[in-house]
Image 1 (cartoon, helix red, strand yellow):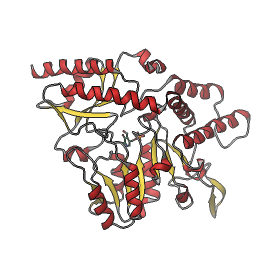
Image 2 (cartoon, protein in one colour):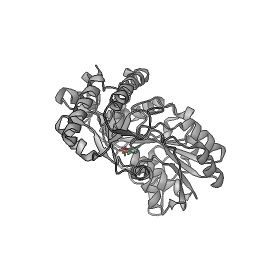
Image 3 (cartoon, rainbow, N blue to C red):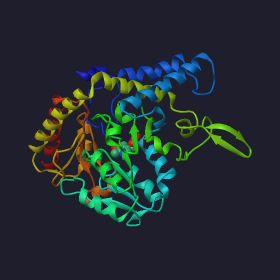
Image 4 (cartoon, helix red, strand yellow):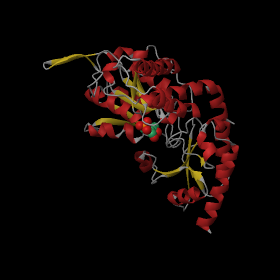
Length: 394
Ligand SMILES: Cc1ncc(COP(=O)(O)O)c(C=O)c1O
């Protein structure tokens, strides 16, 4: 029913199950960007004529909307970026670089691994990784041992694993981390499309947000920074729109958020992202979570009936992504055949090579859902998988 709100589904018969990579965009998101470009295209926070003021107002309205959406305590805590990758890199290079130890989980996306490597950190040498059990659950006991052994660490953990859909209990993780003096960043790339986030309840210090994985445009996202850190954090880029006063001897910076948003922003993207948030408010998380859980459970039950399927976790504490393989079959071959049958999903390592290596596999077949996916999508996927298995096994 909600598919009618998304032009993609009117234009394509594809069974779209690659939401972990990017979600589809409702018409209101697309229209708002066209409207900006066609009717009031101007730069923000600079010129002082009608359209420029409107662009600034629309842009700033989204900051307030996002602040309310995640229940941040001030709009200055919301800084726009081009996505989670930029958000994580920003905090890694401008704030977390001075921490002796960074602690991450076993299920991290490369965006929350490679920036630490770029600082010269390797396992046991400035970087620690929390174990997970055979169901990919976060090992709290090991986490506490790491916190004890590494006072005042920087903890950076994904909220929902894009590869396996595992939801980390960020509230509990943060509480424990704070009790050992650690600071916590959360990679929320996969969060807002699936569940309600209350930043004050989670109590994380930094939270990275992706627009395009939340029914918004590509190239836009945000980083939430808890108010108490705003003054001390240095921008990792500076330039136009970040300064109060400049002469050849020095510059004084504006306060947050402006000191962090250097150069012309993705104005159309931010405006479109605002429409995506309004769209979620209209659908309501209650409905999103309810619809998605039902279809996700059905997906799991139907997949489990297929011969020789191998899962790496059950669906407890999981949403969005279901990953699997078939014994004796290369996952890439399934991807190629499913594409021919009009089913879009991702096969491979899902930018999470370390956990794939730990599991002794090269990658998986990943079905990643959003609330607009329905039982018919699952039936068509299963039909296509059965046909692919016959072709590959004979
Ligand atoms: C868990 C996770 N972290 C980070 C990213 C990167 O997000 P973005 O595309 O917004 O930079 C992704 C994207 O796949 C992701 O799934």
